[in-house]
Amino acid sequence: MRCIAETAPTPNPLPPGRRASERDVFLRNFHPRDIPRIAEIVSDALREHYEPSLYLSLSQQWPQGFLVVQDRDAVPQGFLLGVNQTPGEARILMFAVDARWRDRSIGRTLMEEFLKRSRARGLVRVTLEVRVGNQTALRFYTRFGFSVTDLLRGYYSDGESGYQMTLPL
Ligand SMILES: CC(C)(COP(=O)(O)OP(=O)(O)OC[C@H]1O[C@@H](n2cnc3c(N)ncnc32)[C@H](O)[C@@H]1OP(=O)(O)O)[C@@H](O)C(=O)NCCC(=O)NCCS
Image (cartoon, rainbow, N blue to C red; front, top):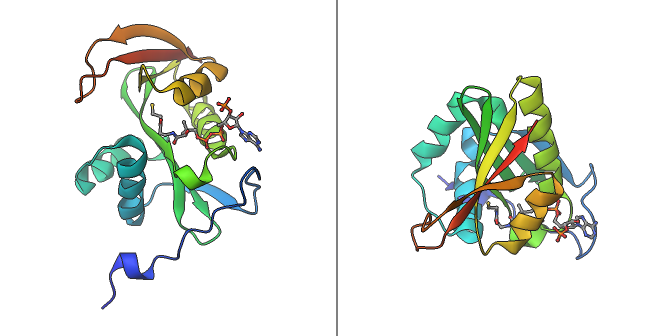
């Protein structure tokens, strides 16, 4: 028997600077088999480690809010996990793209689709939290129209503060 890590194809990133086209990547809903690869992206990009069961339980609350972008080898290279636990409000809990696949509009593709689905669900705003020092993500969210609505002092486990950001839909 072979384990998942042995059978997973090697990620095949695009040359630097080349934007991912529809032929290179494919957006779809999360599937439980994605968990090991998503956990790897979370570990690298967000420096967090969660139980696999957490991804499963969060995916069940609003399955269309958990989006994955896979490459041509069907390997997830980015994802956005949003929930709708408060009436009228979507909350983005996790959002990351593998470092080798950034700056190719994968994040934008994920966010645009998530906002579309949030509107279609009749939600009126999207919220998220971001580290105050995460300039890349702050710039990304600001470009989408998010604005800072709260300062969360010492919000992260290492003591860094966070911003809550909100986008009215
Ligand atoms: C935030 C994050 C998800 C964005 O993902 P991404 O796939 O790199 O996003 P995009 O490619 O759509 O956009 C990123 C930048 O690349 C630029 N870009 C996109 N396509 C481009 C292209 N073809 N040529 C040049 N630049 C391009 C965008 O304009 C954007 O510019 P910016 O640096 O001024 O923000 C990613 O940086 C990430 O995973 N970061 C680590 C985890 C993290 O911080 N998550 C958020 C926690 S709150």
